[in-house]
Length: 361
Length: 178
Image (cartoon, rainbow over all chains, first blue to last red; front, side, top):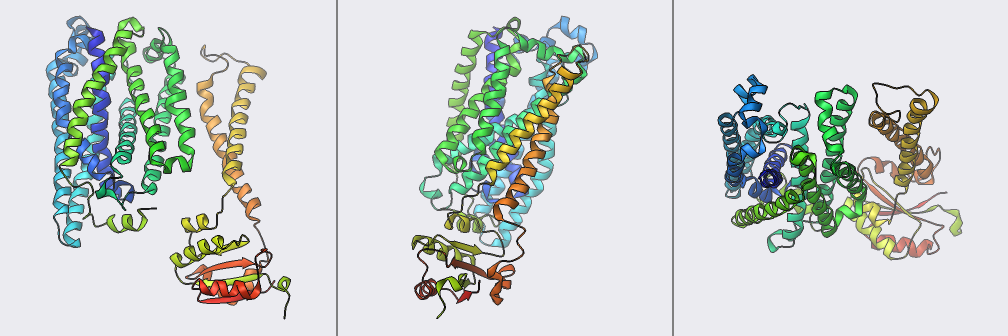
């Protein structure tokens, strides 16, 4: 049963990270502006609005929690003492998850509502008012989201080993969410960029910008992971090093170096190339490859805590199958949400002019 | 009449960025190769129109790789070869702790190669350049755009080239003293 439960957790988190990451990028985009976000505003909103679906898909994790989380067993809880009594227990765990999803979904729906309101504005002044409302929500929203995802990553992933801790874990999760979301957005834009509504607005410049952001996320991922390893390596404390020691046998000793090579080195050198970033179909292929590596990285974060520390082929199959099933449901909802609204926020007062000037090239 | 070698080239003046980009494209298309364009601010399309392919990034890449190898090599040699010392039971080639310095030296040598390579490639500092003989050229630092076709271009012809530049919509075409 642990093969099924742990595989489902990996697949769940993979798709969740896109929903959440897109909400984060949406809020960053409202705050920073810039025409890189012009073409992906609506896809970001559609992806963020899938968050309530992720709450539904979280139910199996609650039901299977005894197969996933050691702290849900009484013997382990007794050993953990107050940590389990006040924090790592099923009722509070479920309550927190529901609270996170209410906060995130609320932000997604409020921002999407404002954005559609802006589509109906008739003057630049009223469009600027709406943009200001979006910023007012995004500032605090970004802060709250960063804090809640840190707790969520501790609850859902780090607590797989309730004795182990890493203070960079939350930010590591955020980096993974952003990377996965940018990769997904590049693929979406390469697919819908040719549509009639997008003609003349989306050009190689947008892919170049998104490609640069993807490169930044790849470097961020490498940087955070190195920081974690470097600190644990330097500290050399048994309660911390156990996490890496567990990943040095049972087949995992090949996965770690493979991640350094394929999740960091290869995409890093590929994405340095300027002309590659400007070609929609090629950058989309690199993005697709990175999404596969995201799944492998999540597998590496979760799976060594199960099956006696050996890679379980059953868990590999379960992960792929459940990622496919969740993906089909997720993408179905995503494209339904995307097609229910105009593809471009044409009334945005800040980026409209710039996009028309620079589009097409 | 002066011989073609008596002047450095012909300079055309434009008053907006789009005009100079269009003129540069047309000039390149007409077969002129010894061409340079001057603008008060960077215009990405202008470099493309000039078919200018910078090479400085390869120098930076080489510098970066050399810096990285030096950084790692220095640490490897000091900690694992010259003064091998066991620190907390870690391997002598403690690669994880070597990464920050390796990274720093990659960036340092890469940045130096970039700055020095840029100066070598663009020929700066250059105390004299003929384009400054055109009095109006000082406006290239504020609000005017200039396109200069040099006399050493095989296609260059004083009269025909001047006519050509005028036909591109230049506000003024001036001969540049050598």
